[in-house]
Structures are given as structure tokens and as C-alpha cells.
Length: 334
Image (cartoon, rainbow, N blue to C red; front, side, top):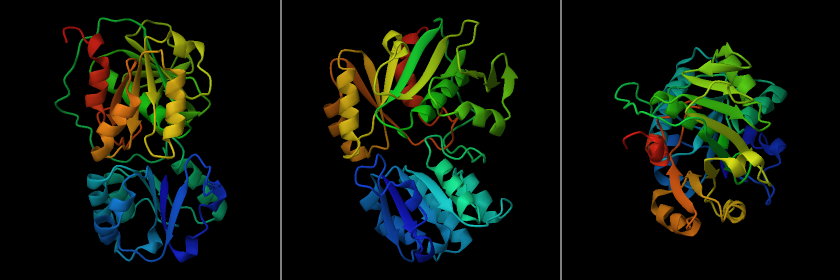
């Protein structure tokens, strides 16, 4: 679910998405008025702890830019949804813009014409989010990364999701990044129509290599690299029918939502996978109900792990604990 806090001037700004429909994959809850962000976080946000996206219309808030930036930082220490800030005409060199990036917020809509604003909003609410800016990685620590030894070769990992915009691409790239950071050779294969690689190649200045690109030790391409690697991560995403890659994978990962409106899709996917060994990955699940959902989703064939918020596409460290748990059997000496 998307929570949209809007001013009266921008009350219809998200209408073009069509997601207000009751049968939408990602319904929108809109609140219109004047807000103070710090007060909203303390007194109201607890009622919306289940949302996966929060869109903030800057002019709806009475906070100064400094107070707004501080409140964003507070917000991200308490809750885990992805944040989009709409602030028409804001420049990249302003203190607020830089403070948002430093807080890990890269979804910033700053266009001034409606067509440009709608394009930016669509990008922000896509699975990978806005990639034109480079926000600070909140959870990643450059120091203290413990390297592992992997003796395996060309282990195929397939990632599917229960519905669109569930975060399969973000998780797949995060896993590939983590594997590379801890010492594995890894290849990411885009096996869906998201087009993320073309965007990443430009925004991250990725180094061309063969038919693909390389970034921070990960080879990215639309097909596997020809030389052997420890792991090949196939980003399949949402699919109604399992393909040969899914069926032949050494490790199958299913990204499933746990919100009430997401559960039917999650259960449908797991029904299709009921006799297949699968690790079920659940993002944006409140701590108090993790045990309940683990009991619902797990089975003799399905193991459940919960994902933390990943603020940046290539940030593999936000979910390092879950990734290490999944990959332990391939770590030599573990």
C-alpha cells in the first residue's frame, strides 16, 4: 500500500496511476491537509506501519526544510517503507535536497510541468525506484566486511515474485552485490522486461564488459557470462508460469508480500511451488507479526526469511544476515 500525504494543491497528483481502484495491486491511501512531519511520525504513523511506500508532498508540511530533513531521518530509523518526496522546482544543490540524499532518500520529484512530474512519480514508484540520484547507503559499512570462501561453480539462483512491484529486482541486485562484497564471483542476469540494466549502466557509470557491464565485482547482463563464476543470479520477477530457469535452479527464492491485500497472491505463488524447495523472502513485515506470517507461509519445502529495507539498489549489506543464512551451505568451512 502507498500512503500519500498531500496538500490541497496536489490532491489529484497520483490519480493518473489508476491505483486508487480497490482491485489495484498497490492501492493508495490519500490524506489531504496540512501536516507537521515530526508530529505525524510520533502520533499517526503507527497506524500505517504496514505500508510499503510513503509519498510526501513537501508543501503539505509546515516544517522548515531543516526540520523536514531531521524528521525524514527519524522516520527511517523507526519505519521501513520507501519514501518519495515531491518538491516542485527544488534544485539539487539546495541543503534539503542534499539532506534527503544523505538520509538515503533518492526518490525526489522536482519537475515543474505535470508531464515531467508524472514521469518522475512513475519512476519513483517502480520496483527499482528512481536511479538518477545516488542516495547515501544507510546500512552499508565499508569496514568490517568478513570475506567468505566459495568453492562452488555456476550455482543457479532464480528469484521470482508473487506480484509486480514486490521488490524482486532490488533483492536480486542486493544479493548479487552482497555475494561480490564477501568474496564470491557472481553474475546477475536480467530475465524480465524491467529494463533496469540500461538505466543502471548510465546512472552508475558501469564498465562495459563483453555483452554486459561490470560494477563492484558483479557482472550484469541479459545472459550469463561465458566464464565460470560461483553464482548466477536470475532476476525473473513476477511470472504466472514457472519457466525452465525456475525449475532447474539450484536455489529458488520467492519474494512474497505479507500485507492482507498481498497474501492471496503470495499464497497462490507458494501453491505453485508447493513441492519445490524454496526460500520465501518477505519484505516490509512488522516485527510483531513476523512469527504469525512465518507460520502461515512455511512448510516442509518452504523456509521463510524476512527482509529489511534496502535504501539503495546495490546495497547488499542491509540484508546481509538473511543473505548469509541462505548461502551458508555454499560457504566453504561454514
